[in-house]
Image (tube, rainbow, N blue to C red):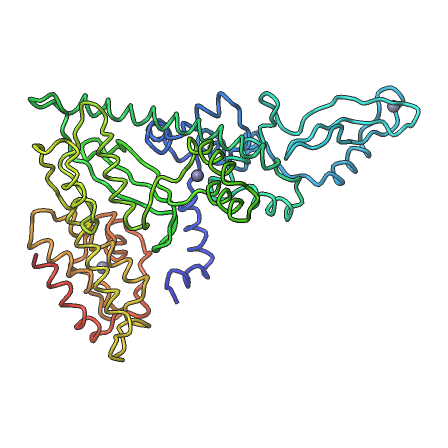
Length: 484
Ligand SMILES: [Zn+2]
Ligand SMILES: [Zn+2]
Ligand SMILES: [Zn+2]
């Protein structure tokens, strides 16, 4: 069992730990709040400003960002709450009376529900008194649409789910149905447009910022090192959507980003209708042309080729006056060879390549360790299992390895020592701690040294440290990479 888990049995440590983890908004300083709002994270969708303008009162996480108040405070601005309408009605009937006939009143839905939004009114129980008092909405409205419906069309896509998932979730919660599919789609489109517009502004801003920082060369270009990396919506070979981003090493900001997709649900649907004979060839072609403008499909090929294709597109549409050079890759992509062939800045401009060393060696070490942990083809047992190379342990070792390389840039000896410290750390036992080479700073990855630096007592020795046999087996991996 993980020693950290065991610790939570103790009421003292668990309370203390929870306190530490919970980041209340109060603990975020004014300065941090400003920087957070200005950072990519805060300003990408510009949530804070948007909220102020639109008063979207259900976006809890965005509210958290601007809310000053602790969760125990009653005046907190999280306005939405789920109420059982029968309980509410019971309470109203017991305490409110009609102001004309003094009979009890109850709360009734006055109009048909629109998504999560409802219009209520108080109705008198006296049949002779047709009073309907104070009609009110369950959520504020912007134009025709309840704000709660707008945020729900933002919330579900934010976790990669659509209207169908929304319907299921809401029905389990006993909440009203989501908006109908067409309205939902229309809203998603509006939100997507707003996001694209914001992304465009942000990218323009980072290009401007870069131009201010970097001097132009004799040809009038701002030449800057840009790191490219791709990400997919799911792991493996079958991912159908991915993004590729170019990040300036100078400013650390994203300069351009592209979304690649090798599928489009509308195209699939049209093709299906056509193959089933529900659309004639003529109708099919007409609809395809019509759909072409908004089609998402922009990548023909495997998920693996997405990164290279994305990089090439980003190069071809480099903002005016900027050149992405050198190309900084993660070492295992085919992007660079394709880029060399395409020569996006003309045949006379050579784009040099640089690999992020920490990234490359870190990746290579992870791969080597993973290979070792698996059962070998000739039937020999791998090094996985208790006291061996578990996935979790490999992940931590890989992360620490990257840190060791980065923190000791340019000093081969220190780098070798720092990387070998990882093995020593992982084979430490309670009786025989071996953390002398682990980094000693306050934010060290080694909890033993971190305790010493911070005066805490959080370190728990490994329950299953790496056995000496395992250490012997993986030592060569550390040696060979350390030598480079
Ligand atoms: Zn009445
Ligand atoms: Zn399409
Ligand atoms: Zn250590």
